[in-house]
Amino acid sequence: MIGSPRGRPGVAALILVAVAVGACADHPPSLARQHYLLHCMGCHGEDGAGLDGQVPDLRRDLARLVAAPGGRAYLLRVPGVTQTTLAPAEVAEVLNYTVREFGGAEVARRIPPFTAAEVAAARSTPLLEVTTTRAGLLGGSGLPTGGR
Ligand code: HEC
Image 1 (cartoon, rainbow, N blue to C red):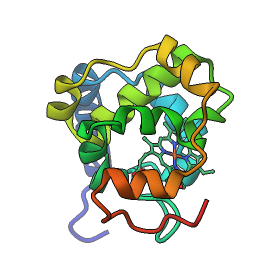
Image 2: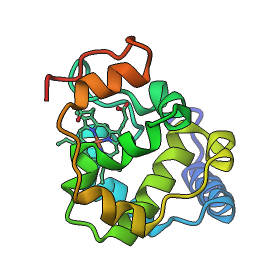
Image 3: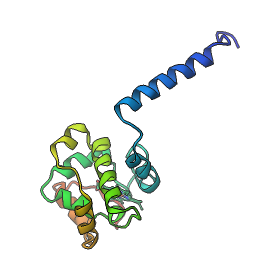
């Protein structure tokens, strides 16, 4: 191929490996991320973008929600969180991952980490008025999320 000497794909692969290793040094590929990919990504997307009009974009509202009074209880009690088959300790880790990844490191530092005990307690009191609670937390600006 013109302009593509034989050695180049190899070099590109090496650069990719170096970038991946560099990324791993900062954020080891955690079990929490794997759990997110298996149990949450189907609705929320790998990048947290969600599904237009059905699943909210975590990158947009999560930081505000987690900081709002009552926001922590909301996050712990949305159906996707209370109904997952993951164990409470795993859910706590996934929530901490989710906040860090999509709410931002700064937000994650400001809140106490979610715990297994909190998750277990929240499971027994799932949220019934999800959309109304969410809109209230966001000051009425919560977008419709599919009417669940
Ligand atoms: C079946 C689809 C689905 C799955 C699976 C799911 N979620 Fe959700 N999630 C939603 C929807 C829809 C909302 C918006 C609230 C509502 O209507 O339930 C939401 C809201 C949230 C919120 C609050 C963000 C906001 O803007 O309201 C968090 C945090 C969250 N989910 C985390 C998770 C985690 C962590 C998992 C995996 C353990 C998960 N979700 C699995 C659909 C899902």
